[in-house]
Image 1 (cartoon, rainbow, N blue to C red):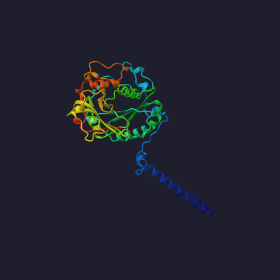
Image 2: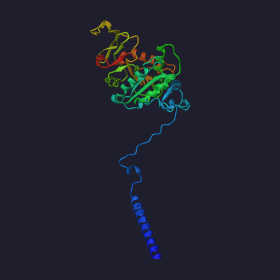
Image 3: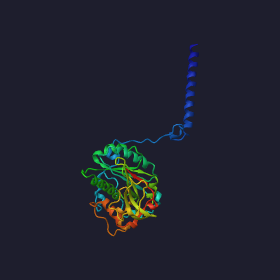
Image 4: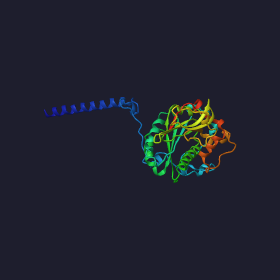
Length: 339
């Protein structure tokens, strides 16, 4: 009896081992026909790309560019570019080699300067960012700021969803106007050095826009200008600042306080043939004037980087108004409000 029990137990173990072997063989056989990627085996949970955020300083992650890195002489060869600048400028003839773009494809380069003493600056910048998010691409937002205040703004810019570059400077100023001009020059130096071809517009952080405005300025070939409504709630003041046009031709300029004029009429007596200075938010231009002035009728090339770029742009615009295009047609619609 004992030997029969042992023989039954042995045969049972043998059968069990045979079943296990058969199952493993069948599974291995069919597995050989399955695809090698595991992504197709799980249809209910698609595989997502995993991004790794480097633990780098904010200066590198946020594209914060110090002004000292972009004020580089034109004659400086690429071999001695400052360390950390990974974007050498293209050849000088790159702008001429490109095919003409349709207006809808032109890059808008929106430059915004800042003031450290403006307590509402963060709110203004965020509001402007929401506006720029609604503008069809391509668009690049250049935000210029004192290096000491850059960290907080960099954190905010990261969340805007707008393509931007955050440029900083370390110079100290006591004159707000001089600081504003310097910030404009920092932005224009960056545009020139990197050959960013597009339409440049200076957008104050407090500006309010009609979104159709951005479609209009993409039509600019060389220079464009438009009326700006300057509004001050504290002073209860509203003024009209900008060109008087016939069709798209500029015929004169006006700066008129309309606070007490309920009819909002503008007459010929209000018009000046030459403005002392165009409102910084009231003009735009093709950025290639910065590195290819001969293309736009300038007989000589630009001076070196000691050149005051924003002053140069003002001079070019005012010296020949035939190059200016009034926006929109007849300059008959306010599309920019400066608060």
